[in-house]
Length: 295
Image 1 (spheres, rainbow, N blue to C red):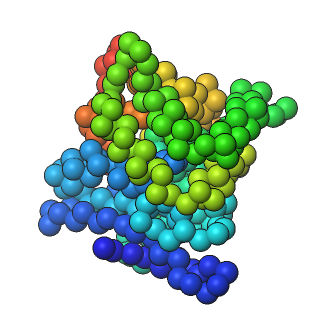
Image 2 (cartoon, rainbow, N blue to C red; image 1 turned 135 degrees about the vertical axis):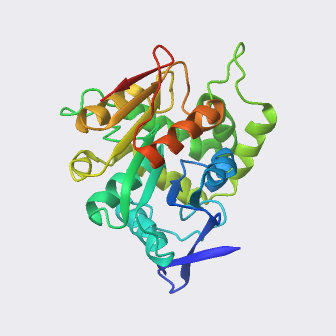
């Protein structure tokens, strides 16, 4: 297995980040995939299987506390998580990369671009991302009410396993009449989420709920792609994708009609096509009414 060191914990132990690096011989560009909460880099299976076949080097790593990475007691704030991303880019000496942040990972993209000046980055993509600021406040009236996040914490503390199984269904829009993913896939996600540190799961939920990325977005000066499903019940598009697009008027904004939060599975082929097109050409062409494209 491959690991990158990103500092040490309070006891002086190395913090190691597990990563996958798929590097075809004909690679012309590099993509770094940053996973969502509460999963690991394995969530990107369908992208890892497809993007390298189009001449893209693809790196995906496990956030600290999740997957096969170290599980330190602390360091789950976005400044530290952005520093972990920097460690990945620096250690592998990646240049002119496209950062793709899904959900919570979108926050890491935004914070990295401001905290580290966008070093080594050519393009960024926000997929179902938590940016610009999820929490509803007086100056962010379109955000999500604090009670929603309080309920997440309460349910994690009460019965983490039960919460993760219920959350997984919402993640993909599973209902009595709609089953876009199999029970086997849900079981796999549960296994991926349950091996994470309990503390990391709690702390990261608080981080993505309360961190304000509005100033971070103003620092982004590279081509940007925003993708969000308009049936996302986990990170509602009205509180995230639309506001991110408003904050980045020059970005390309694609709305996936009828898609839930976990569109990296439910619309995997379409997402792969859009990401490949964006990395290679900077433009992702879709006809109405399949999607809405705003420039």
